[in-house]
Length: 226
Image 1 (cartoon, one colour):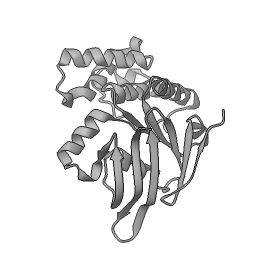
Image 2 (cartoon, one colour):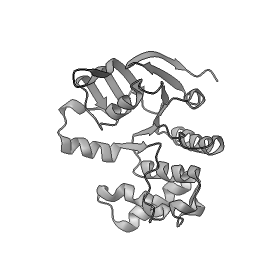
Image 3 (cartoon, one colour):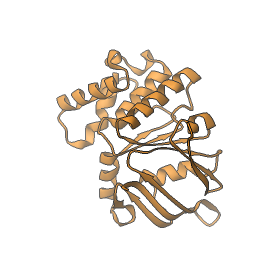
């Protein structure tokens, strides 16, 4: 089995007083959809930062898409993050003055792809998330759910091996949140490995496997029995 994420005895401490993760071991296989659920302060966002190579562990082994993160210099780590990992956050982080297609195309700015090709791929990504009719709309002309779908399109336009979504429905009403979850499921069905960080049990249960964390420790792992 190929692991997209492989964490072994990972600890993350901040100074002498705060230990956000305590000897966490977790493997996520290629093509899985996994939710990581826990209350505020449980360590789930720190776990996402470690998996996304946004932060380094204090100790332990972190492998992402087969790369030993601890052995990579910052430059190669940035390249790994840019080419193999997509991020979706609770805040949409869209540029207000740009159209949807340009916001998504910007996700390929550092990939050395010509502008025309970036826009072509951006159009395809927006069509994939059901926004082919909103290509030239700016964020203020779209609903919250549509803006989050633009953010998802931007995250996957480079066809990453791993998509990390941190509270992707946190700022959305129930209907818009359901739309975004459907998009994530569609991406998963198409072969993308998806990890969703959430405190919402209904969002967590929509994944194939749920990982529960509290106080920096993995309490349990289980599969949905739908």
